Structure formats: structure tokens, C-alpha cells
Length: 196
Image (tube, rainbow, N blue to C red; front, side, top):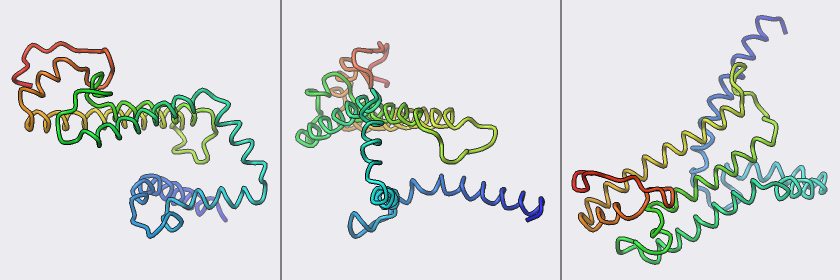
């Protein structure tokens, strides 16, 4: 392959990688008939293929995962998420002001942020398989993705606040004045409670 064709091939590969990195998260929502038939089962199937060739890989993976504090941050976030979800489902026909909702108005989003923070820290201990671009540090890129996720959850939480304000009115405004947004014990004072 001559130099010109190699540059074209590399450019096409780079564009294809960039496009697939954007599209793959959308494919996880493709309906499937069972757990083994979805596109997101491809990483599991690949891992199992490597596992059957070298069963010792499981031990080294478990040592890598559970030998670091990052997994405990992730598990803490996951446990908080499950507890908040169960509590919300049990009390969903009212404005919830007890349980985890006594400390923050959006405990599920807080839990997801904690969980993904642990996963992001865990990613920093690995080597990237594909460089995103020659001029971009992949670790900085992963950090930017996590920050973008935080911004998205803050926006979603604000949208939920507006919907709850419309549904519950003054009861919700009183709740807003008593309970933190997403960080426990961090309360920002408001001058105008009626015009939020």
C-alpha cells in the first residue's frame, strides 16, 4: 500500500471509529428478544471467548477490579441508586420528602454521578484501546464525558423540579427551601421562593 492510500485508509478508519463511538451507546437500546441476542452482549461474548481460552483471566480481572478503591465508590453509588429507586417506587403517588429524599431532592441522579465517578476513576487505571484523536489525551476525553454527564443530569433534575413545582405548587417550594438539590447538606439560599 503506497503512502497516499495508507493516509486515506487511516482517515477512513479514524472517521469510522469516531462515528461508531457515537452510535454504539444508542445501539444498547435496540430491542432484543433475550439477554443473549442484543448488540450489547458482544463485549460479554468476546470476554467469554477469551475466558474459555485462558480461565486465569477471571482471577486477574477480579484482582484488578476489587483490589482498587474505585470499585467501592462505584458499588456505593449503585447501592444508593437501588435504594433510592426502591424508595421512590414505594412512595410514587405523592411528593416524597422522606428517606433519601430528606437529604437531597434527586438522590438517584446523585447516586448515578457517584457510580460513574468510580467507573471513570477505574478507567484511568487502564490503557485505552483506541486513540480518539492524535491531539486529544484519552483520559482527558473520558473526564470530559463524565463532566458532560453531570451537566446532563443537572439539567434533567432541573426539568423534574419544574414539573414537580407545576404539580405540587407551594408544597414543592417549601420542600425546595428545606432540602438540597443534589449534594447533601449544601443548601443555596433563595431570595424569591415563589418565582423559581
